[in-house]
Image 1 (cartoon, helix red, strand yellow):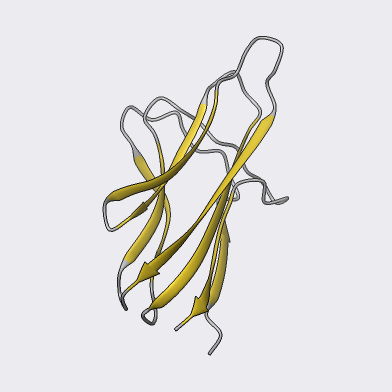
Image 2: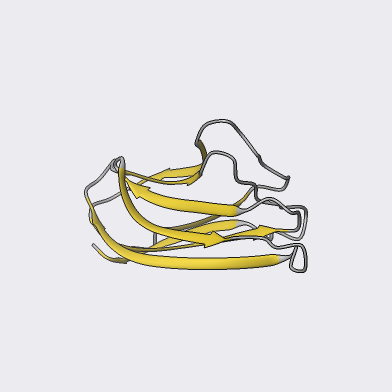
Length: 115
């Protein structure tokens, strides 16, 4: 049984006044999943993206830009046990920004390890 997905934004997002969901996925079957996300930025805005499972914070990636350091990417990953239909999503935290284009710099990927 193979279950996997990958998504990217394909455009710059943020900054927003409130948190905003970037990408989400519902578990197609119950099991153990691995998720990884990368957030890229190339502006003076800070970057902070978090991964949530059913509304609960799991992991975060943060980068604080400086005048001498505008381009950076950060990644994080987590293994989660999910029940069928449970939601996992990434959120861009308020007042932060990520960048993406056709090169897919900002991504969210997951796959089923064991059902």
